[in-house]
Length: 337
Ligand code: EPU
Image (cartoon, rainbow, N blue to C red):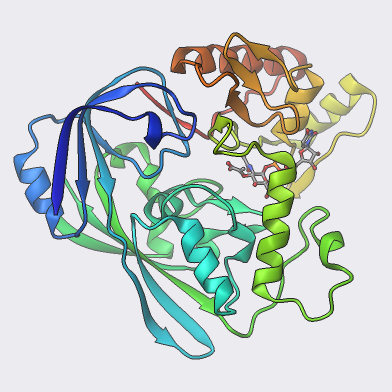
């Protein structure tokens, strides 16, 4: 089924809670709706949106936003491993919750991440040492250039840190994800190597996926703003991966040890740390702010922030980090104009 609304307010469809509107909003419940939608679309400016959890609407969107309401959750095979085909409109955390309830391992570390399943696969969501690419078997999409449905294997998705083939510049607007298939397993175990996650479960003997889910949600809640109270897009910036020479230079600038994680012959430095060192943790400008417990998260501090205000704050942070450390931070959140 296809539903269409003109001049649609999208405040409830972006987790920043920016009060913006789009010219046209289209929801679809079946993959087979898409050829019909594209055959009749009048505007050639469009993009897909899930829960808008990784988007900054800088101003109103003059075009069509397409929102999947495909909510399938089909277990296609189940023994030691389980293959599940999921509609792109299904909230990904509902998928995590179901897998944990029936005791299958693989995505419990991705608990509590806002956003729909389709966007999760496009963005390669990750947390606590796991990325969706680790369990992803197939992405099904409608190719709007060739007007046909196509399947992507995990390799064909070309996954990297918060990146996939669907985000490549030349594919902008090309693919609308309809389903993803993931593989989870009965015979797995907890992956608790990230940060101090292990400490939270050390006293527990027989650990289940649901135990890990609860721990991850607790850990997130301790640092990240409650999405029902304070608008944000989660991590606003990517963590920069820098040359060893840059890392050494930064150590000299601060005169103390710099947190870092090896990435091949380079190192990843937490953007949160760089931002904190520049004095931005907990600061606000007008209605836009830097979260006081995790400075990687920019927030709609008063609920009245405009996209322009968040953008201005971003600009100041990028400028300061560049001036102090010579590192250019890149946003993770998509900017929509
Ligand atoms: N840190 C600080 N000050 C702070 C907070 C953190 O210096 O106030 C430094 C510390 O060195 C800490 C490091 O940052 O060890 C890492 O912090 P954290 O574990 O919170 O992770 P992150 O790198 O800031 C990434 C993801 C998150 C994900 C967490 C947990 C990115 C851009 N972000 O954040 O993903 O939940 O790891 O795995 O990779 C998201 O993408 O929206 C998101 C929330």
